[in-house]
Image 1 (cartoon, rainbow, N blue to C red):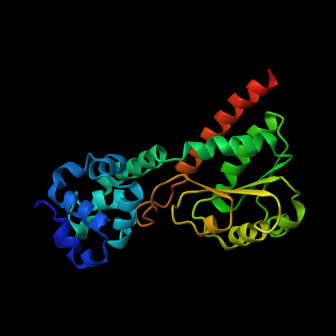
Image 2 (cartoon, one colour; image 1 turned 90 degrees about the vertical axis):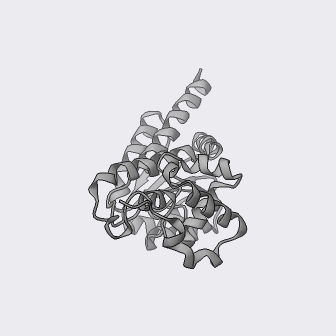
Length: 252
């Protein structure tokens, strides 16, 4: 099997790259054999750029993110979506890189908001319903006034129900569902606090909420992965564990 060449695959996209992105591009092309074991964070450090620069470069090449680029360089382009042997490693890389890039300060700030908010609303739709229900039940067992809602009718009027200083946490895989986008847009104009927990770093909901916590540094390739809610669950567990720890300190 011939060694893949980044330049041969994407030379037509070079003009669209910035100087920093081209620097990363040619570094990768000169270190193809090392890329399989190089993480997004390590690659950024080696090239003295941000992880965002690398992700943006990948997107300009027409890819979802760095993990897809790394996967593409392991096998011929024509069979990259048909080889099941690499699916687990690619998924694992995306999740690990997502975890390593989660903004810890945002987690701690959100926990403080949960502790001091008069009421916490957790809003979900579709497959994130189970995650939201788990989140809210743990908060309730710790005597936090938490309300879980997944009903589309309630979500439509939630902006009229919440009161000043309430906290609304929207959990969404894509951050692009029409109902949750409308909810976030309406909440933007009242005095409640809004947080979105999403997988996609390109989630449109970010423009409407106070804080966005990304569970992944790149979009999942829907052709390879139909199910990818684990990163959201990891973020929720991080929040809950910090909340329980801080809450216990306050009770003592």
